[in-house]
Length: 310
Picture 1: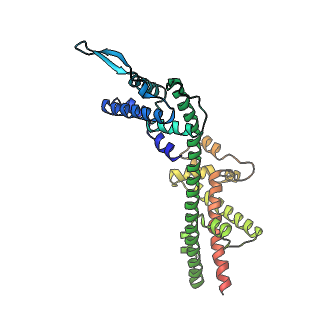
Picture 2: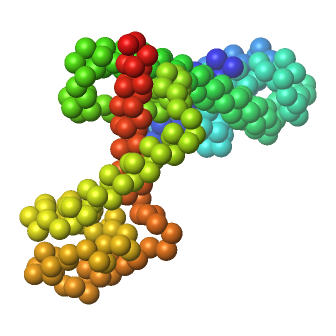
Picture 3: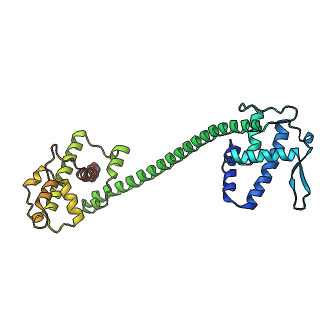
């Protein structure tokens, strides 16, 4: 498998497309050498019996240029492979015939009387390509699995570090509140994701379902009040103003909208502030409630933990 993976990373097509005469000539030489050595070793072709000379052209002086049948055969094979199998690397030629000889796949290839049809070479290389595809597919799956495991291990390590950090911060906050009774500074440092870690993942903070439901209602009430206060503020920054409008519930229709009407089209405002059927459904409102709930449950957990120490 490793040989195939390494070889497939560099094919003949890239060299042929480069147009670099020197690189192409070197590749051609290597390919012909690979063909000669491979066919000798794995097919029983008899190159020594292919030494009859064949006229292939004439020089500038008109002198005949002759090449052996073996040379012509190897040249034809090289041209055939470059044209039909440029996706292979030169070193894969030997690997293809070695695997075929090892019965890794079937291909019609027999040297009759020391001769070998070029079509049989194509049969072996085609069978090799099918085999290579399955090997590379398996290799890719293995890489994906290893990568997934690596990511899982990395994520697990990060989660462990996050848990340790949050727990350390939480313990320090409990100690601070126990000593000072002050939550004002503590609240500023609590992150929204701490609630999930301390309640769900570590189980450090424990509340009954009824208590959690009460905290949710407290978070909703806080966000609702904050939203109404912001809605009545004509000097609210534009980005926050737009966010506030999207969060308004049906009760806001009764709120004082005069601050908006001086600057904005009432119809447009009414469209944005239209009643919602079943309470707050807008995602921004939900996000803010979740954030507030997370902060509240950590704060209440700190108080609860502090009371245990007294």
